[in-house]
Length: 258
Length: 96
Image 1: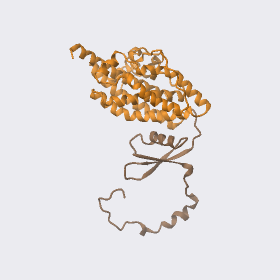
Image 2: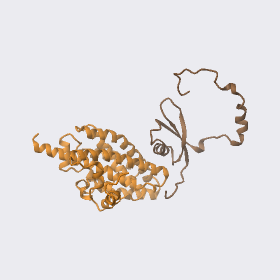
Image 3: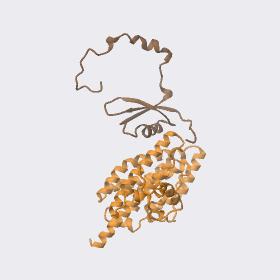
Image 4: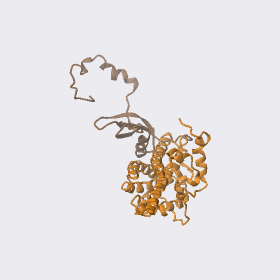
């Protein structure tokens, strides 16, 4: 491998770690918005647990991304001092919580994806990513179980819960195409055996999601061709508001610690 | 909490380690046993408290009546010979 290929490989690896970290971070922040507002105390804790798992994953991925980047930035600086266009999370995770059902539909779609991804990432040629995936896959298995269980209850519940779950699914489905779309970074890490090919995850993901939707009596929406580009830094308008809340403290009191 | 769902109460029992018995740790609300297990996991095992969970609907538990306490428990009070305090227990025996 020549020097420039190695450089681009190194950069792709850093960008890839950043994407995984940002995706977990932003979804974790979204779930944190439920704390104190969930429909029952038990669900409050359930969502908070998933939130903390995701933020734990984000810390590992972001620390690794910062190390690869080699500019001396910390995980905290990456989380709290970047603006929306520098975030590399997929657009799906920044979508607003909506009602409880919509939050759980979003969670199902993401957890099923992360489960397929981490299972394969465990055998990455990159030892750090493999290690983070091995830890995260166990957490994610529970996230999937928890969200699938709720989507089935709501989909196959009352007419109102069914209608709300179906409408959430219809609204969120178009964002799932981005999970399986490859760009130069995805292709570069796949070619190096660092990560699975994004498109290769789709069939397993779909089978997993379809099984839940069938039990939930929900109809899978038609695929949309509109491309979202959150992982390239082109976000929906929702991310800015989320960051304003998440980053407020570090922006108002730079370097504040506790 | 915006509303409080009208869910039945479950009692939660957790086994701390293999070989130990399940101990009652508290209760929670859930619509059915599956959800009760998930809630128990989320509420009561956040700090590695256990390796196994049992849940049972509180309404399925038959409980002694506090009014019967005299008849139930007082008679045991003066029967000190029932305590195995006259034996020496080998050090190897744990959790007795």
